[in-house]
Every structure is written in C-alpha cells, then in structure tokens.
Image 1 (tube, rainbow, N blue to C red):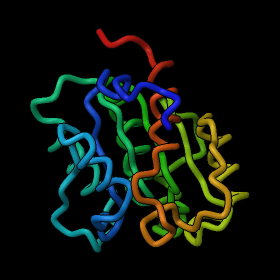
Image 2 (image 1 turned 60 degrees about the vertical axis):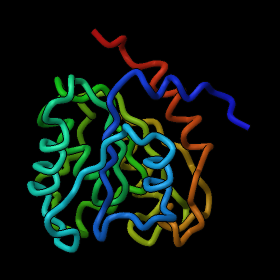
Image 3 (image 1 turned 45 degrees about the vertical axis):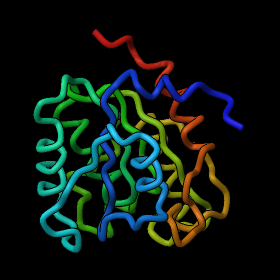
Length: 185
C-alpha cells in the first residue's frame, strides 16, 4: 500500500528518459507511463547509439509546449542524459530522478558528466549488483552530485530483467522528493 499521495506527482510535468534500447513493456518506466498516461517519454531516432547530445535533444523535443520546470526521471544512459540536461538547462528542470545511472566512463563521457553538484535537486536509486555501475561508484557519484542515494539492494540494473515492473516503492520515494521541491510558480 502506498504511503504517499501520488497526486504530488502531478505538481510538475514528468518526462521519462529511458536508456539504451528503450524500455520494454514490463519495465517500470513503461508501467508508470500506463499508470500516468499524461507523463511524457522521450522518443529516440536511434535507441542503440549512446549519444548524449541526441538524448538531450530528445528531451528538448518532449518539452516543446510544456510549461517548465519539469521533473526528469532517467534510467541508465537516460539518467546520465537527464543529469547533463539539468546541468545545461537548470531553469527548465525542477528536479531529476536518476535510476541506475550507468558509469559515465563506459561511454567516454568523463568530460561531460562531471563530479560536481547538480544544479537542481536530485534523487538517485542504485543497486548493489548493477553490472553498469559498481555500488562504490554509485556512492561516489551520489556524493559528488549532492544527490541523496536510495540503496535498492541486490537489484541488478533496476529494470524489467531484474523484476522491476510497477515499482510502487520508487513512486512513493519520488512523491516524497517532489514534496520538498520549490513550489511551482
């Protein structure tokens, strides 16, 4: 049973930012989009190519016609793209939720994804058994980005293959996070 009122998630437009290969129908991002059909989700020309600028352009396309600021919820490479977008356009972003961000060096992004505090409030979920980001590195990035870390335990890459479908606990945590964001003007 939910501890929080999910109506808090209506305070900002939400943009889901999947990682490489998009998210299958059983993935928590897809489940959440069905639960909240007005939430936006980026569409990508090439889901196989980890292109940071391309992912940020996809976020820009989704924001057309939206009143900023928005809440970005990114997974894996999409989390890195969400971080980079928030750093470049902080006035357009109320907050960022980073779920299982991939190690930036895996994509040669150490010059773009920096160990500096996020320009907006952030929340990070990480797994102790994520093949794309060692947990000690998750703690490093969480501290560097000044982004509270929620330890999901041994949860693989926090995706459908790891059994993360509806994932209501994360929605509870995000609702709590949104409650502490600055009031929308």
